[in-house]
Image (cartoon, rainbow, N blue to C red; front, side, top):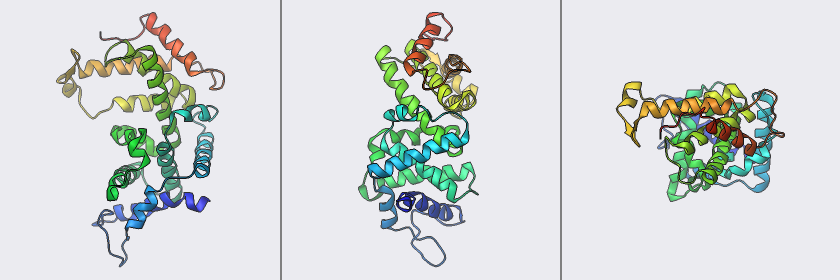
Length: 281
């Protein structure tokens, strides 16, 4: 079973050799004289969806990774996994296995392998991955800084994604129709950071939350962009402030199985009621 589960990661490992060798391209490499042969069968192996049994093995491996990293807790993994799609789990598992098989790869190299590969597999031969129809499409939309963190901490990145999805569901329930810069947006940023802090620790939560705001634009460039009556720098400053307020709702003694995400949402709402958040309008 493990051999079958390693298929996608092994394919990615093969692709790493192709991508990192000068002059080689995984997209059109069809020679076998010392080079990597990427065929229809290779892409088909990536597109193949995992069975329920395989998926449980993947989830167990991801939980083990969370526990070994000691950066957070796997106690709430089953609850948070309700907010994940199968494609999310497969994608992260492939990165974990890729790193095991290729420990020499840098975060930059991992990013260069897995994100283009995901896009290629989604469109290959007109076949759509399960992930392309579900939330996994969000992985490609991450900032460069976020992608590096995914490469460095794939198991934690899955928790971050689940926290985002859970946050969206709670925010829509409390602030339907929220927009960038309003009270609902402030609630959303703070709650996302609170859930991350509870489950992966304050340090990584801050790294992921800050990376999300690192779009690559300078302050000057952000000032020249505007939406909903405020410039991009004002929006960024609001988000970073509210991210911190969300992390502050988690106490050092809080543990995932004793504090629910609803509890965290109520703590965030209290900060909003106490005018501790930045709200643009």
